[in-house]
Image (cartoon, rainbow, N blue to C red):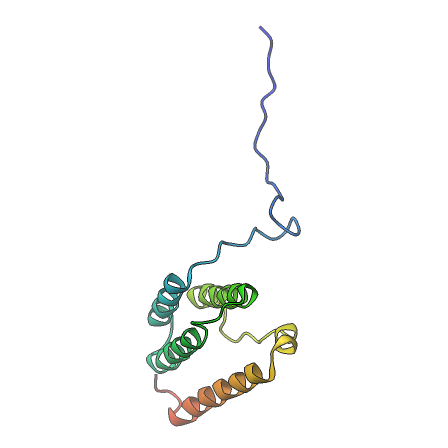
Length: 132
C-alpha cells in the first residue's frame, strides 16, 4: 500500500493587497448599515453623544439618498461601515483622523467636520465634569 501525502490547508493571500491585511468585508446595503449605526450608537455611546451621533447619521444618509455616482456611493458606505466597526469595538476613543483623509475632503466636508467639532466641544462645555 502506497502512503499518499496529504495536502494541508494553509493561509492564503488571495483577495488581499498584502499578506498582512485580511480581505475587506462586503459592503452592507444602505438601510441595514443605517440600522447598524443606530444600534451601535445605542449600545456604545453615552446618551448625549448618542443624540448627536444619531442626528448626524440621519442627516448624512438623507443628504446622500439621491446620489447616483457609484464611486460616491461605495465611498460613502465604506466609510460609514468602517465607522460602525470602530464604534462597536471602542477603537475610536481618542483616535485622530488620518491626514490623508482630511487632505481628500472637499471644502464642504471640512466645513461639516468643523461644525461637528464645535457641537462636540459645546456639549463638553455644557456638561459639568464628573457627570455622565
